[in-house]
Amino acid sequence: MTALDGIRVLDFTHVQSGPSCTQMLAWLGADVIKLEHPETGDATRRQLMDVPDVDSLYFTMLNHNKRSMALDARNPVGKDVLTRLIGTCDVLVENFAPGALDRMGFSWERIHAMNPQIILASVKGFGPGANQDCKVYENVAQCIGGAASTTGFPDGVPLITSAQIGDAGTGLHLALGIVAALFQRIRTGRGQRVLAPMQDGVVNLCRVKLRDQQRLQSGPLEEYSQHGRGIPFGDATPRAGNDSGGGQPGRILKCKGWETDPNAYIYFVTQAAVWESICELIGKPEWQDDPEYTSLPARLPKLDEIFAAIEDWTQTKTKFEVLEICNPRGIPVGPILSMKEIADDEDLRRNRTIVSVPHPERGDYLSVGCPIKFSDFEVAVERSPLLGEHTTEILQDLLGYSGDALDRVMASGAVGKS
Ligand code: COA
Image (cartoon, rainbow, N blue to C red; front, side, top):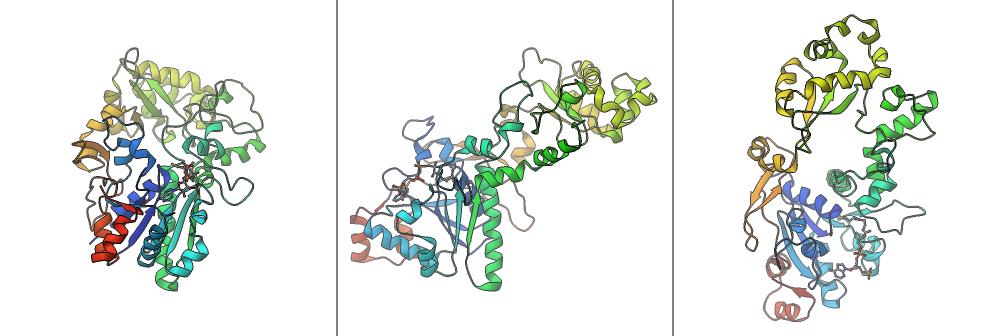
């Protein structure tokens, strides 16, 4: 038995934010039925295609463990099928542009009247307010949530991070909201509406930068490298390059081979608790007793000098040698792993976070499995469905269509099957 056994999710999502949420629910054991337009399907099926006429990796990597039903929700027969589906499901998840679900004729009020126990969960770009009608994609979310203004180097342009904090980050927030609403329903018997705006999700993930915004009122942010360089602070949290966001200064430093390997670097944290060990390791034992270096406040204005000395040492070792030497000494370091190294990582494969999945049209493909591990059940990662692969079985087994009624629906143009 899995965590969400018996929970049925109507997955009216597309692109990344919504599908990442419903994929997580599917991994937790819910029966997830993905609804897609019979002609176009989820647009990502055909985006960034690497094999002609085969579902793209963009799609296959975000839609594991789901069933697919092709359904036109604007066709009258399709509306009837959707109404019956709403009656049998616990959760409806959608991430259409604002107003699209209402335009299809399925407002929250109507959905709630059809099934008072159902949870309607939505991703939108913004929450209620001046921008509530705007469409939003990942990079836009990073900009409107404060991430871009605080990512990059102080003398460079704002940067986007490649971690999909706007899409997959919001998907995770929504999944948590859905599970919480399911839990509340056990006590109230009622469904409710759950909204996860992308802007709000990014703000939640950027809280340390809002912390620094307030700290600025009390003076310069001393742990930022720009402080040691004598560069004055403005009135907003600046970009901090690779400075650590906490109280333990850290930087990305060159390792052996950096001249030719773009990933021959390591993140090195000068944690105060192991300062003496670091001094010993890099050949600066004199810093252990020098009051100019012994305390963290004394070190903060000298971060450039300190990290230059550490880098003199890290450049004599590969990133994995630095890891091997620092770990037993309790010095926190992180080699910059490339996606190639991630793909081949033995532990990630053994723990099924990196998985190889068979697919009838593309053959085996590499994907990311469930990153959460449970002691009472194991998540089995299954391939993404073909467009409309499960239309007939859902109509028959779930909704009870058979004989002439089934033929009529199939002939109506409202549904499709692969
Ligand atoms: N049957 C009938 N109509 C369908 C359908 C189906 N199965 N699936 C989609 N449609 C229709 C929608 O009803 C909508 O029609 P309408 O606008 O004419 O009323 C239309 O297809 C397009 O949907 P929309 O969501 O507007 O797609 P888009 O490609 O124009 O915009 C986004 C894409 C992502 C920008 C937008 O959906 C959005 O802002 N979503 C919320 C935020 C979000 O999740 N962003 C991140 C995505 S990773």
